[in-house]
Length: 458
Image 1 (tube, one colour):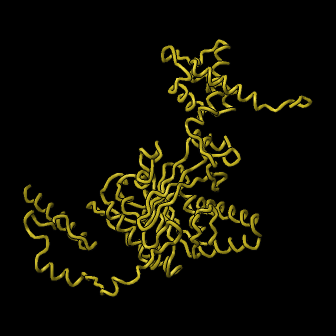
Image 2 (cartoon, rainbow, N blue to C red; image 1 turned 30 degrees about the horizontal axis):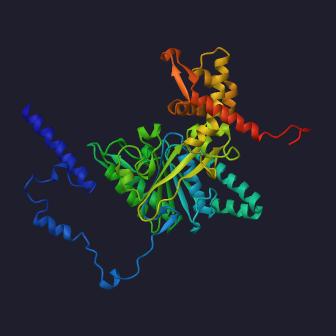
Image 3 (cartoon, rainbow, N blue to C red; image 1 turned 180 degrees about the horizontal axis):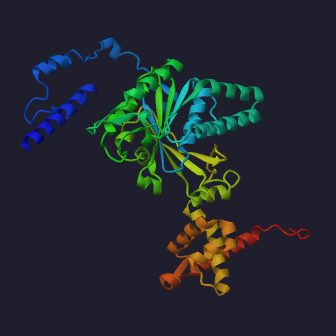
C-alpha cells in the first residue's frame, strides 16, 4: 500500500517535470529552500549564454529621444490597450469603429480632436463572443454608417473609397466556440501557459497579411483566457502573452475588450483612476495595459441634464443610449477628455455636452418649480403626494422624465423646499414656506416674460 503511494507520487512528479520542460518553465518544486541561492554557478553559466545585456554609448543616451509610436491617437503601438465596460456598454461597436478608422483613415466619431492624423493600415479582429455572421453584421452597420455619412458630407466618390479601404484592410478571425483558439491554456497539472498551437499560426497569418504595423483586435478578454478573470492565478501569464502578441509583428499593437468590475457594472468609475482600474478581476490587466478606456452608460437624469434635446432625445436618455468614454490612462502621453457617444440602430454618433452644463442651483431653479407645482396640484386633488404618485403623474413625467423626478424631488427635500410627513408606507410631501416662495417667484418671472396674445398690446 505504501509502495503504491510512493509510486503514484513519483509518477505525478515525473509528469509535472515533463510538462514544465516542454513549456520551458521551471517545475513547481524548482525553487530552492529559503536561505539557499536562487541561481547556482552551473545555472548561472547556462543563463549567461541565453541573456543579452543591452548596452548603449554616451552618444546614444544623449541623442534625440525617439517619439512614441501610435496606431491611433491614444492607442500606442507595441503594447496592448484595454476597452473596459460593463454589460452592453458598446465595447465591441467602439472597437469596430477604431478598426475602421485605422483601416480607412476616416475618423467617423471625431475622436482625433488634436488633429494628429493617422496612416491607414491593416487590421485583424479575433472575436470570441459573436458568431462570424453577427460580427460581420456589426461591421456592416459601422461601414454603412460611415459610407452614408461621408456621402452626405462630402461625395459618393470618397464614400466608395472609404468602403474599398475597409474591404482591403480588415480581416476577421472567428473564434467563438473554439476552445482551442484561446490565448492561453491550462495543462493537466493546472499550469496556465501560452497557447502556442493557436498563437503561432495566428501571428503568422497576420504577418503574411501585414508584415508591419497591423492593428490587432480581440473581443473579449474573458473568453480568450483560461481560468477566472477575477483573480491573479495565471493573470501574469496572460499579460505576458498580450505583450508578446502586441510586439511579435514590428509596429503592431493590440486592442482588447474587457468586462468591467462587478462594482463598476453598477456604479460608473469616477475619475481617471477609477477608469484606469475599470477592468474586471485581477488589476494586473489594467495595471500593465499602456492605455485604458472605460465605457459607462449614463443614467437618464444625467443625460437629460447634460445634453440639449436636439442632440439627445428624451427617449434616448430614458433608454440609456448615451455612453461616456473615459481615457483613464495613457502611460506615455496625455489622457483625453471624456467623450460621449449615442447608440442608434447599431451605429454610434458623437455628441457634445451643452455649452452650459447645469449645476445643482440651476436644476433647482429650472426644474424645482415644475415639481413643486405638481406637488401642489396633486395635493389639492386630495391625493397623497408620495414619490410614486409623482412618478405616475403623466403631466409631470412629460415635463421632466421619471429619472429626473426622483433626483429633483430628493434635491428639493434636502434643500428644505419640501418636507416629508407620515410613515414610510404613507409618506407624503408638502411645500414649505421656502418652496412656496420659489414657486411664486418662478410664476411671476414666467408671467413677466410671457408673450402677449395676438391683438394684445405689448
